Image (cartoon, rainbow, N blue to C red; front, side, top):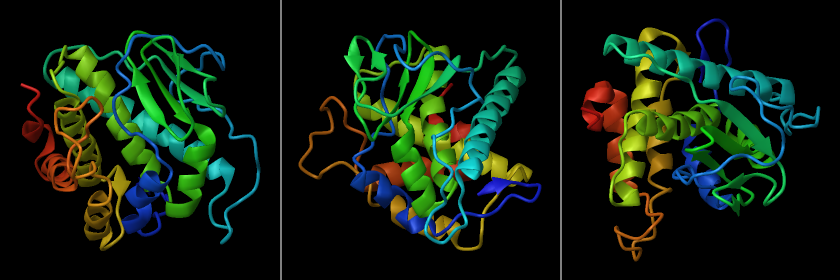
Length: 249
C-alpha cells in the first residue's frame, strides 16, 4: 500500500495482523485521560526516527521508508477526516501529537505507563503513542500496510472523541474503529490516493481472522475487541461501504 505517485506496494497482507498478535500489540482503546510524559511533544505527521539505518533482510525496507510511510499515513488520515468533517459542515482539528516511544512506561496515559508492543490513542492529551521498535519490526516483516491500518484504527478513536461517541462496552468502540479504519483505507483506494496489489484484500481478510479475541473472552469484558468474524465484518463493511456503514450518524 502506498500513495499513488510511485509508492511501493506492501508484502503479503496475510501476515500483517498475525504479526500484531505475535507482538502482543493492541490496536485499540487508549481512551483514558492523560498527557505524554516522555519523549517530548511532536507534531502529528512528524514521527521520530527509529534511531537506526539498517534495512530488513531482503534489503527493500529502510528506516527512511518507514519514516516516510508513517508520515504519509498520518497526513492522509488528517486530510481524509478534514474532508469528511467539512462535508458535514464541521471543522476538524487533527490529532495534536504522534508520540513514539521505545521503553515500557516511557509514555504515560492517565497516570499509567504504556507497555511495549503497543499503540494507543489517549484522549485528554489528544495524542497517539506507539512503540517504535515494535512498529518498525512489523513494518520490516509485512510492509507499509501495517502503518496505514495502525494509524487508521487509532485515528478513528480520536475521531470518536471529537464526535462525542462513547459506548458502554469496549467492544462497541473497537468494532466501530475497525469499520472507520476500513472506510479510511477503502475510500483512499477508490480515490486513487492509495494503491493495493492484486489479491491483497483476500490476504487482508485472512489476516483479520487472526486478531479476534479468545473465544472464551466475554464480549462485555473491558478491553474486548471482538471475535475474528466481528472484526473482519466491521473492517470490510467500512472498506466496501465507507462511513455510512459505521454508525456515526
